[in-house]
Length: 289
Image (cartoon, rainbow, N blue to C red; front, side, top):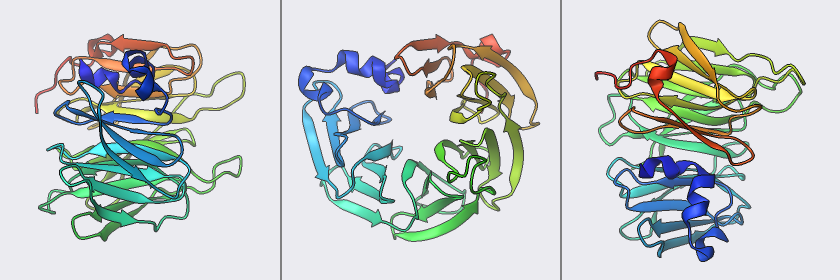
């Protein structure tokens, strides 16, 4: 259940006062459940022991805010992005930065480790403001591919914003949440668009931003959510919509799946967390890989 603590409101209720004061923007747990990465809200990366909340590492940057924390599968490295366009990776054994680039025109809101099936040491993917998502061979610091997300700016004139995406290595896909109201599935190897889904308009203001995505183990069923409060389940193979469930009255700010696929967790802006079983959507509770 520790992975469900990724929902920040739930985490904050469990932290000691010293830790609560420094958690501001984002939080992620390592795959082995032993570490948590947070930000001070003033551009400092903090890595905590997830059992006793003792501080393990601190790294101060020149940026105002850090986002998109992600750990490697072996829990040895953590990545983060910043509002100033920085993307960095820290070695958690030594505390040293092993990767540090600042080559994007806007913020880096989300980072994910993954694979394209051909790079032995894996890739680091990053996106945020702007119309591109970039992958890096992070062990060498070399950009691998720039994916054109196909729309810039948004209808209101603001830059295209990506606040979440999932790497689906079992299928060779990227599942991208776009703030222009789309969830998009892309091929990692070619950058081609496989499927696109459009969120419903929110009646009171006509918005339909997609804030977050999640994928069940096996990579066949995906979920996206955001403005409107609905979680939408889709078949990533066929592109069909499976079902939708209203979980919050207005907005889903966070959506995550437990690693075994048995539960989904959502969070709204007032801190209300909801747990769902994927079977509520007609999706299998666990998918065969």
